[in-house]
Amino acid sequence: MDLLAKLEKMEIKPVVLENLPSWIFKGETSINKSLKNYWGNEEEILSALNYLFEERSVDGIIFLCSFCCGPDSLIDEITTRNAKLTGIPYICMVIDEHAGQTGLITRIESFVDMVVFRKTAGEKTEC
Image 1: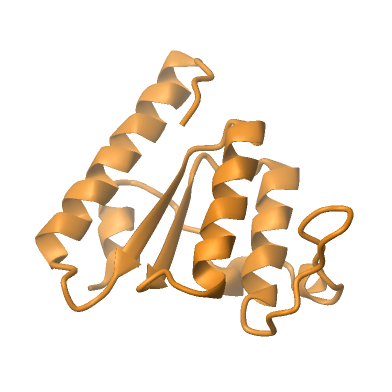
Image 2: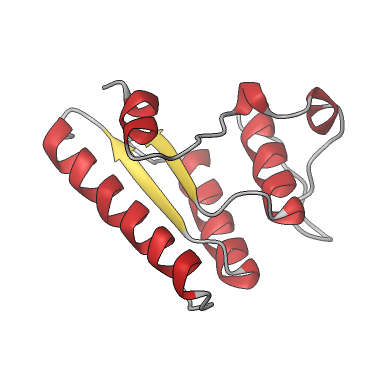
């Protein structure tokens, strides 16, 4: 759906996994003190999210997933909790056979509007 180009048209500078420093992907990701990640495919996602939350170098996070079942649903829950703790706006966009381009763009535009409003207002509100 060319989401990156659509974000750039909205004057958003998207950051994707490939743009992040490679060193953040070298270690093992812990979900909390007692729970470690054991899904290989999700290791990159969790490492990237942990980095973004720690660095606070982004104004918002959009997580695209297909169907959002299995490990993706756990990542969504972990990310939702971390977003609330850090105050970084977060949205999970589920792409499946029912995902139309218009609905996706509307949700992203609304999310971007909220992030821009928060940034310009200088307010910290829960997401």
